Length: 378
Image 1: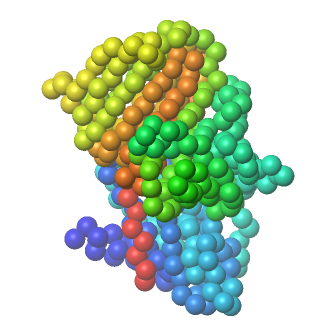
Image 2: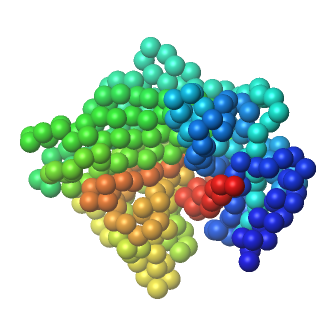
Image 3: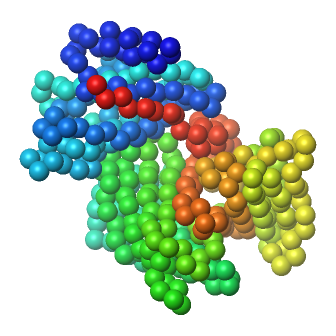
């Protein structure tokens, strides 16, 4: 009934503007108000149906035009569009649903204003993030008003074999997926080199313009071979101890790391346990209980300097109960890992200033639970 009502209302409201090519049914499902929330929707068009992405327009339920980026993924032999990603930002209330329309403009429109991906000899600049074309780093610069967020070695992928051997990721190619300005993204491919051969991987790096976060999705592109876990190392440029950490576990669990200390969280099936202390002699700190029954898949890492760097981070796999591990050291180094048997993970890091409750404007739960969108072709 709800779907039919939405469709009827959408078609009636948009009837004066011509028949839509597609309807986008959007629903907020986490019970949170979203402000300028990034959305990417894949669309397919028939042969000759749309000749130029600048002809496309996104229309709201009141007939208002919504700024959108139309990223072309594939064309038909006559150069008309076959696959396109609609990228836009949407504000919506908790539990609300809305219906948007994709339609053709009478004339091509100019591209939306804003900063687009910039290519240089050594990499791609996506807003505040620099992705090198070669070398061990996945992202080697993250620069906001507070300055550089990461140390020179940058964010790096790695894998660990069942025998405990750590494998560095080697990048083979970098390809621009979406130029922006609303939701720029690149795709990287590479290998993990093992004693028995090469294991390919693929990763996407996405940087929406309405949020100061980066979303990294990694997957093994072939058989995992001897690899037991895959991971990501994030060496943040902290200025002062103690580093402060918190995790969502039904309620927040807090800790602070004095110089030379580390914290480890392990999770599986929602259950979790934390240990704290010197890296070679960690002691139990907190664990699953009736009061704090479940790890929600997210946490914060905060510089000890007043008003310093703060990072909200999380993984959709951890939030859904998949096994994982997080290790954080007092100097701001975060290492995250997932079971390679899952083959794929998504990690999101939101870069803001302390206090996060004032500067972030987006909760970690919102970050991990995107809006539900269904494309309905006419």
